[in-house]
Length: 422
Image (cartoon, rainbow, N blue to C red; front, top):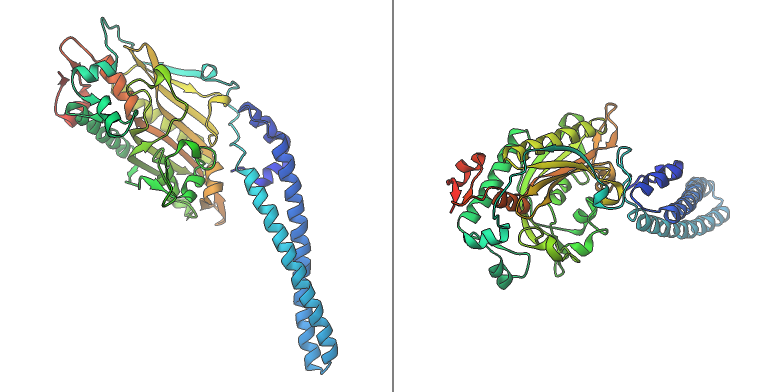
């Protein structure tokens, strides 16, 4: 959530930066600043009335001691009237605050100055490429390979739940487990502490990281208990620090978690949803950092480098993109996407997003640290996929297929216990 002081003091800057995200905030900012002025004026008036009440209370005591009862009763009447007026002012202020909050949560995060302008994925900027794209003869897409080697059953998933809920079998299940363990091991070696969070969160957690109310329609809602199935481990892991003030010495905080993720993906259709390309339930390993504001962009670059190390170790051709304003999330200030090349589909598949949210989430979470002077200040939060499994597995199955079977990358062999899927 954006800081209201920034909207008050630099509205033109906010308008300019949000236009990079193709978001016109003119009407919202004007209304916010009008309500903020009304709220501050009401607060000044309320403070004045409360001060007058305190003064009269002392005066009443003195009058009573002096035996001047009639004058004391007049003063009491004034206090009663002031209390009624103060109550009305307080209610008016609460109304202003309620409307202010409703407006503020509609404003996305400001994009970093390095974010390129653009509206669609084609406007993203490629900042790095690596690996060699394999040349395959008579290659099969992963959904056909999954059926050929009986490792993923998409039809059984439809029977049990619906489309987008595959069942992994045999070596398919083992390589999933191997990838999860490998990613977690790589992350913990990099200094991330592993945690195992809940798979459902409450409304406050969804609001804290920005999924609610912006992306509420994409989340699975458990209505009876008013819980939400998590779309990513980012939500529960970051919310560990909601309403927390961290000592400066604790920064940076680095955490990693494996969880299933649940997304409705409403409106998705066509070739992009074939097989593992887009699922409603999928496995993902996440990395999260809480940092000092001065260190967050250094942390972001290190996170990108770490994810690149993992992708390179799998031997997959990849590219790193800096997302344009129109393709960025509501909460992000700067995002790098990782894509791997699917040789059989002849297309790039997104497997990771690594983002700096600056203080946007922290302001919602009330996540602070004690600065060098011992005063509370908003921390910065970051997160990234390290990695999302479905499209990684899709690329591994397609790129490593041979006439004898699907070769397992060397780094995974000790984790899954076999060298080939045949």
